[in-house]
Structures are given as C-alpha cells and as structure tokens.
Image (cartoon, rainbow, N blue to C red; front, side, top):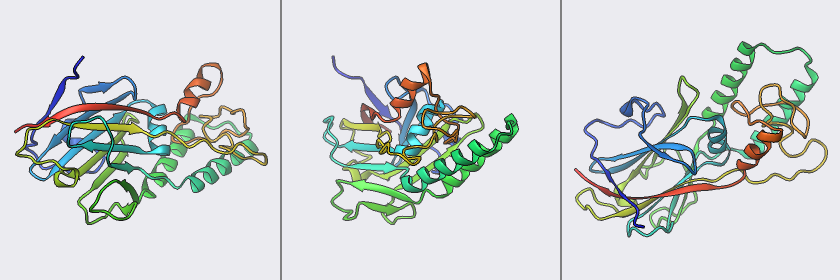
Length: 260
C-alpha cells in the first residue's frame, strides 16, 4: 500500500528556531505511533523546517539522552544517506551527574516536597539544555567533520526546550540545497525521524551504570539511588518495559513534497 504524501507548505511567517514552537501555537497535528511524537514540517525559499513534540517524559528523556537523527533523501527512497543528530549530550558527564545525584538522594533521608522535586527537575533540565553545543552530521559532501557547533556556518539551526506542560519541543532548520531540495521543485522526497535511544551502559560494580539515575522522583531503582533525569522513567513491573524502551531506537518515514 502506497504511503500518503505529505504536502509541506511554504511558511508565510519568519521562522525562529528557539524551541518555543510559537509558529504552531504549540499544536502539531501529525502523530506517529511508533515514536509517540507529534510533528510538522514547513519550508521557505531556503530552508526545510522540522518540528517535533514529545508529550511524555519517556520520549523526552529518550531524546535528551540519545538525540534525534533527521535524514532527508531527495530521491524519495526510504534510505538514510545523511543525517543531522541533535541533541548531543556528554554521556560521561550525564552519568556522573546521575550517580552523584542518586548518592546524595540516598544519603538524604528527608522526604522532598513536590515543590522541591519540581525545582530540582527544572535545575537539571536547564543545566542540560545550556550544555547542548554540538550537532552531529554524517553523509554530507560539503561538511567534512562529524561534529559542528550549534553556531555553525552551514545554515543548520537547532532549538530544544520544555514548554509549560513539560512537553519537550525540538526544532530544526536545514538548508534545502544541503539535502538536495529546491523550493521550486515539487518532486517527492523522504524524511526519516529517528530517536536513537541510549547506548546500553556497562553494568559493572562500584555504582556503575545509571546508578539509579532514571529511577524517577524518589523511586529507588534496582541499581540503588533515586536520582532523576528530567523527571525520570519508572521502574518495576510496568515501568521495567518502559525503561528498556529507552535503549531501543525507534523511527518513522514520511513521503513529502514542497508546495507553495
């Protein structure tokens, strides 16, 4: 069965990549069941824009820890020939922060109030967002390095933030010519959105692995500690399968064409 082709409209407004989703009033009508993301696309004469929203903590954590890879194939084939991956988190620093927070929480027997936990989550999130300075790029003949700054000269722009409902917003602008597209050409092409998932850590002794970092608010994980990463993923009977999904890549393809 042939996949429906999405018509990507021309934006009449100036798009600002800032993770605030102001151009869509926080509403993305398309939804993918595999990745559990809402999404939308638009374009202008020079750029293709990608907007994603993760409404649940699980998908938000997965994005923050493993990044989103966006691939565009100008021939329309569902084959990734290049990719832009963001965010790129310093996993070593992230793991250390999780372990340290888990150890501090284990030593602190005082029950935290909801307000204190909310403040802690906000602090973790802001610290993580502030540290996102790199974009991984692969498969581009015009870019000879694999990592570029978010302030790069190639025209690739990224934005990520949380809204007031704790949904994670991801935004990307990529030059049309960089991915072989032309605003005046209505040929079909393919877009792939991939949540990479977290690389499985080594579960050694001495507080290895996540150190309980994904254990959620005050919920002790099997490895000890009760730290949290942007709100955390549950463990236990139901949460165990949710937790493991963080390590499994998920993606979807979209057939599209640019329209005026």
